[in-house]
Image 1: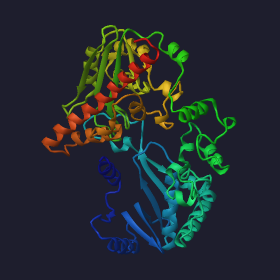
Image 2 (image 1 turned 90 degrees about the horizontal axis):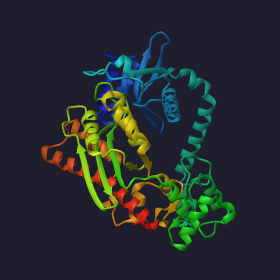
Image 3 (image 1 turned 45 degrees about the horizontal axis):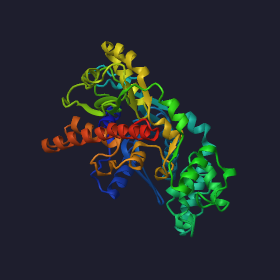
Length: 458
């Protein structure tokens, strides 16, 4: 959704270049690129082809001083990843196959420390141009070896055989669960996926599979960590593991009335509001359940910022400050996120600094017990996300919601801001967002109540 705006900011740095329009058909785009290369024109969205390889270069710049070409990439990221270097090398191989003289590699990415002043983005501060040429040259040996392996694999694939499996030390093939060809990698043993559910197993699970261990039961205890032994026992018995003593200590100082808080946020890489940074999380919605355990009364509070043209941070925190009773324990799932939201908003609006100081020590992370396996249900299958945990301990599930993931909520709210919805759809999306966030905080309540029941406190 933001890509078009980012791309335009990058292209504006080169105002006199030609562009291969996306409306061109495939063959026309190759022919037009070749024509402009012969004319030594710099080209946006250049389509290159050599033998059976094709590539699309964001910007192919002609350098008249060196009579060569510079490969450019535009990426809305904050740091350079290996896949970018591999992408450059692929473009290089195709371009040189076309007899182009490649003299450099450059990247435009995002300056993550950029602080949006308001009104409009200042490209000279927001965009960061990096010359990747020295790094490409220093890592040429690595790239050449990867290219050689890639070509070998292409040839083998053309012959309808597959060399690699998930048992090889390849980042893309870590688990039988994500294997694209289980009948090749584990013929007759495709159902052995469960050993890859062991927590922190990764490469170990590959070794176990190679040794003939294809189920929880067959992996010897001598091979397992204490946490993995808990998992194994839970799956063999079908019973939930529960570390009562650890929980009693963890919940010692919890207040009688407790809160369950969940934020939803957007983190656009093109900042929308003054004094925000790229990728900064901007809260626009919270759901707050408050439970008085002594009277067994549950109250729900929520705020969704519907004034889509304005910064939601101040009104979100102002309403939360009103809705949240003072001095009570606040449960969140992976509470680092909720605390970061409040802390960064308070830094931007100092009137909330006192509120932040008051609440930051009241948070308890309800994800920690599941990450550390103080409690484990075999239905979790090694996972510790709220969406995996909730159906194991209650009748509730995110499965029936229109919005089921935080990333989708992020995307939907950005659609509202960009006015990419009808009035009817806007109303539906707002209700869907509230329903999603509400289930998250209500799910925390259900989990906490379940823990108290297991501790025989209620």
